Each structure stands twice: as C-alpha cells, then as structure tokens.
Image (cartoon, rainbow, N blue to C red):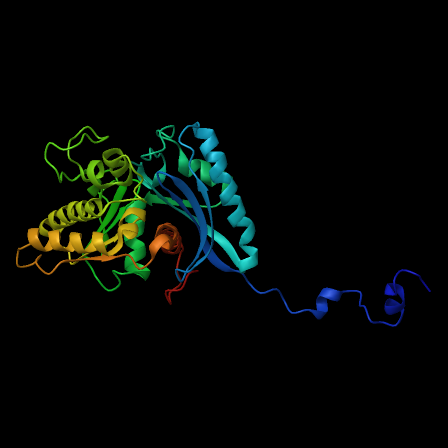
Length: 338
C-alpha cells in the first residue's frame, strides 16, 4: 500500500483504468471562425468572428503616432496572439484571417498606408500577419468591410444598393451597388472623405480644399475648434451633420442609393443633432425622382461593425478559395468529387 494520497489504493481496487481516455466522450469539434483585424487611424482591434457573424471576443490597442513601423506591428501582434489563445475558450478554431484597413491599400492588403499611421507606408501587412498566424489572410479597405457587415448583420440587411460611412478620427466608407461591393481599379473605391463639400475650404491631407475629411472628421473638428470632438458645441454637431448629408446627397444622386448608414465615434457621439441635420441636408439636395426618398440612419452594429466586417472579408475570401479547390478536383460520373 502506498501513502501517495490514496491514488495507489484506488488503482489497486480497479477504479482507474489503463486507458482512462477510453472512458471519455470524444472531444467536441471546434467550430471554424475568422480572426478579424481592424486597422484604423487611432487603434488596432482584433477579434473572433463566427461564421454566423457573432463577435465572440476582441482586444484593442491604441495607436501611438510617434513610433516606427515595427513598434506598431509589435502592438498589433500582442492583441492578435491574445485572440488566438482565446479561441479554444470559445470552442473555436481560427480558419482564416480577415483584415479591414484604413486606406490607401494595395490589393488584398498586400501593402497598406493607412491615414493616421504615418510610419506605415507600403507596409507589407498581409505577409506579416500570415507569418504571425500561419493562416491564410484576406484583406480589404475598412469602409468596404463595414459595408459588408451592415449588409450582413446590420442596418442595410435586405438592400442591394447602399453606402456605409464612418465619421470618426478620419472618414471612410464602402459602397454596395446591385448587391456587389464596389472595388474600383485599385481596390480603394469608397473614399467619400474626399468629396468636396466646402469649395475653397480647408486644405485636406490629399492636397485638395474643402474635402469632407478636412471639414467633418474628428481631426478636422479639433483643428477648427481647438476642442476635442467629445466636447462639441451644438453648432459644430449641426454643421458636421449638414456636411455629411451633403456628401450623402451627392452619392445618392450619382449612384441611385437607397440608404446611407453612418457610424463612427463622431457621428454616434453627436447623436440626434447630427442625424437630424444630415437627413435635412440630404432631403434638400437629393431631389431626383429616384433619390428623394433616400435616408440616413445610424449603424446597428456600433463599435462591433469594423470587426464583423473584417470577419466578413475573411469569410468571403476563404469561401472563394474553397470554391476554387472544389472546382479543381476531378469528378466522378455522378458529379461528385473523385
């Protein structure tokens, strides 16, 4: 008999078996999920998005504008690794990575030069994230990712032609026409922040004057007022809403859109004052028979939209690649893979 805490006694009585795992149920298979990454002007976010569009978890790291490219990537690495470690807790396995990144970007986020992160110029984001996660990586513009999210789980469900705009530190957007996200020649379609809303207005970072981003973004509001956009005057909230409504009217007249969904910290923070002014301006400027019913509405996904959108980018890319593999497989006479 042993004095080892009774373990040997139990073994002698046959309580334990040679193959204890044989008495257990097989492990539950882990559901596939996308590791979603959002790169904005002031923060990095990473999260786990299920194939049903649920955001299971997330981590956030603020961007330090004064550090170099590798310091930025180390900060991103920290939250990515946190989410990979948390996947098991949620009974998920990371099947792909999806990235939504502020522009401009190269195809599939092979290179990125996001506004607000000055040391990332042509940074090879997709390659670096692929090396970090050892997983297939798909990337797109953050505004396009948000448009996919709102059409999938948010305020634009059931619509075929709409725009989703984020009015935050900077301004980004994605446009869906006839059920398809517009890519453009370089993949950067949807940069509505560079619609001119104030002719001869403030100089924008792009070099033009009077761009929406130079007049209505969080950075612009702080430069104009000397105050944080979290401390706005009533006049500033109204003016910002009017300018966004003016840009929205241009889009609705040009592209025959049904709806403009607006999110972002500035717009949501300014709340009803912003949205009422935006809708009034839209209704005033969009008067064509097909555009006069266009509406502006707040996002339904709030601060979850960016990561759900990045998840959608990953799911779309992953599905596309799986379809390519299936088409490449030889088939039997019955049409099944051989």
